Image (tube, rainbow, N blue to C red; front, side, top):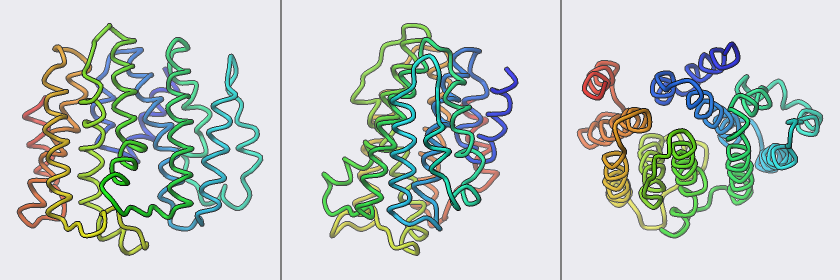
Length: 269
């Protein structure tokens, strides 16, 4: 319970979008979803780190993946921790404590979270070494699946584990893709400044906006099909914020204001 509370505090500092829906989940499911998001935030911080070179990012990500793949009754990150040199002073708390997040979930579901995180870390390592080169829509589909669509699949597994809730898994992938694409649109300028573009060749914001809206429509179907309960309560919040963000950007805003966020949360709570 203490680790979960501390983990939520760390999550609040790194991802307010998911802190709120995770914090209202019932016990058991809360620890599982928190574990998943903290582990994935830990590797996301490596992928996005502005001071690490691509080779170092790939090495760290693959070491985390190997640590998770070798986990059984005990989770041992000695190889990852031992591989840290100067990076230890650069990486944030959420990444340095990844071993703690890995054991936060109940034992009956933790291995599924390790599997998902390990696979995502390997995919991130691939994209880092590729310098996130996206040339076609197929490349974009692959990347958004790698870092977000697969999260939708994991969430579906967590809902089924907790109370037997069944979902459409193609829509689950779109749920993750839709949220990720809104982030791509929102962060386009920052990405360009660091020499990265997630836009396929020839695509403008118009095409990326259409891609995002298509996946958000599928995400609506996913969320609306969920029975009343924790899964639906969770999904409604980030989805509503994504819809609000893409609408705000279409009106010329860079992002939602604090008032906008409060109004959206009031509608879905």
